[in-house]
Image (tube, rainbow, N blue to C red; front, top):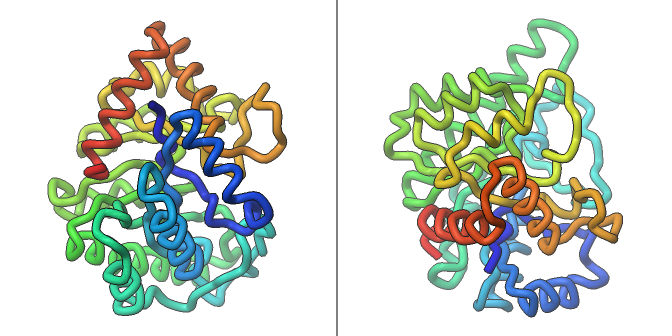
Length: 280
């Protein structure tokens, strides 16, 4: 069995064939967690999880890019759909979590920091970062209240996220750094704090200053989760332009090759890791 720990079959990119994709994945023994990025996609993730109780789960949260700070022009993602929020509505999301059947919502996420699109002036940049940090702190408290692990999104902001986590009594926060793209030093800080590291199709790419092979070699298999981030980050030779949870097999194969271990060992241990973190 394989578990895609970070999928987005709740996005509009799958509106036309969502059921067919999910059924095919489950038939091939690939389970999945669909990740919320705002209220609407979180709600959709729960709806899907309720429909497929044997192998499909949900997380809920407000992605930093969907937090409308009013300080940058927000890019509309046609694969996701457009649902931006001025603030994280704590009570609204709590109600959403309570509406789900027991065990369907397994995490809070994806939440975090994203400095890819940012204001140009120093004053606006600081205000922009402060608003993102405030939203993150709210959702960390939300995760603590619900006693759920966290799925962290972080792009071009690892040092700030590490600082926040070091200040937040991390032993009480369990979670995964999703789709990790960072330095070896940053990786070691996350591992030191006890977090899992998520790897997906981006490990097939070349990014200046990032050594994915070195990062994978330095991450114990017992701390790795595998994911797709579908419909994005389609691995080479997948056979389709749009990614889906079946692509997690290619990620596992790549990790096995880099670590020089059997594919079966990667699937066994990463599945065990996933079950332990998300209590599924």
